[in-house]
Image (cartoon, rainbow, N blue to C red; front, side):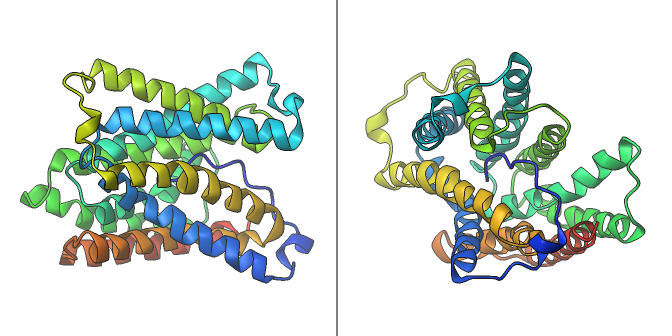
Length: 312
């Protein structure tokens, strides 16, 4: 699951008509593949590693690396934040990293990575619902996309109801998407550090530390034997830290400044397709009719919502 996203700048006419260069396509491909592959990476990590402790270690490491990178690139002053900004970053980090990502990691101990990605793809739908609850009336086409997406989610949850996968795992991913949506929505309303990299570093550190604490409370450290961790899990954890949390995020932030938002936002419905394909090809995850049909409905609904909202 991708790390926190900075508030996207409002599209301007000049920005929407910038030339699409080779660098833009390269960065976009990175976001497509890297963020889409994080679900596969998580699934491989939790095969032999405890969920919350491994997720906490991932984000603490990524947060420290990003903090060092910010200090090196922009100077130590770029890490300064007011008490209010720091508090907001911690809150958003708990919602996104601990709640959103943490529940996905826990769920993937029993839920296929492709199914998890498709359930998380509903995040834009929940954001629309949250906006509507605060008096921001979405367009009719957007509401139509939400209703269609909910129908897709109903189809996607059917494997849990039939016993093909654990219903608790499916519900955890749905809960994760709700918390991620709440965190994303809150980030647009709260005062965060001016440098988006600084804000994300603090969010990752807060969420990572909280994840380790939850892992300890759950007793994941009892009988823990690092020697039993597979090489594949170690490599996947390293991939999530370096590629999922740093390379993908850096490419995304750069794209927000260099490419039209209408192009950048396509990651929302490309990532789950990549995740499903990788899960089937590498982990031999079954492509059942609920996953194919429900996934297609959700991705189509998200496409409608994103395409409508980006015109605003």
